[in-house]
Image (cartoon, rainbow, N blue to C red; front, side):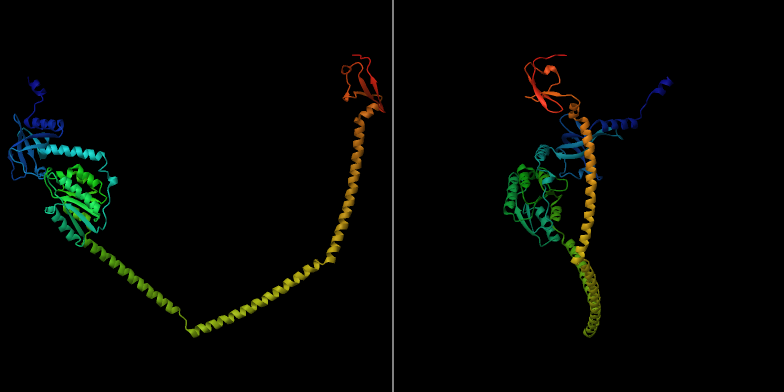
Length: 448
């Protein structure tokens, strides 16, 4: 029995709750849950504790301060809400609970789904593409503000622009920013501003509110008006956590109307500071340039020569040039004389009588060489002739004929007869002897 107890894996309560919490944490992803709020408690810690229930069941929930302060509405008992939560267990009491990360009124659920569908559609069509975003002007002359003329947004924008750059001209295009006709009003005004083309940039803005309050800026007609605008558009709708379709389509999205005004306007203080820096640099450059010119004038002044001194130096240089010129002329005359003597010597060598005598000697010499060459050539040719004659006699057929031989041919074709088979009875043949020839008629053929 003792051994059985030792083999058992006995849990304590802390271990059980910890492992159950671990299973719940890892076994469930973030879930969306709809229910009615009950037992809402908001202690001084800032955390909220409540129950969500339907007609047959309820579950305990906690929403911590870091999350609930982002809500744009105040929850109350009996309110129908949709939450995004993590399934867990509160270990000290072993209670199953949900830790809520996001909460919205249940009526916003359909709008949120509609928002996501339109967002995905327009993104697929390329309305959010970064490649088509236009750059904001660095120093705009005139800003157009499309918003409600009585809302807090226009006050924030004008206050910020006056503080940063009071000389910047602002044109207000009044529109309704909430309600059914608002989307059409906003889109028409954006098109009107483009048609009038009197602004460098357009600021489409309004203050914060619920998803339903901001819905005018989630309409497709507003999205296409911003997309088709040739003037750069800044969207500043709601607060930091608010995102609308207009924000995604606009060339630039600002978190708040104030941030948009700061983004589009130059800062006067910063510009003055930059101008002071530029002025300081320019003063230093001018001072440095003036100093450089002064030094250059001093240097030039040192190099200026008194007219009398200049005349003396010029006369001295003139004397020096005259001396060098005379010396050069004398040297040239000497050179020319030497060259003339050399030319005279060359003319002596080129005298016609002298040249005739030289040419006659050359002709006599060449004649002797030619005569000698002719004699040698004739001797060589005579020897070759005698040798060739001897060789020709040795191989000549006439020598064969001199020994008593003859050759026979057919006179018609000059064919040499080498065999009796070439002959026919009554053929005329010509027989060549060593001296003379004769013709004969074949009357008998002997084939041997």
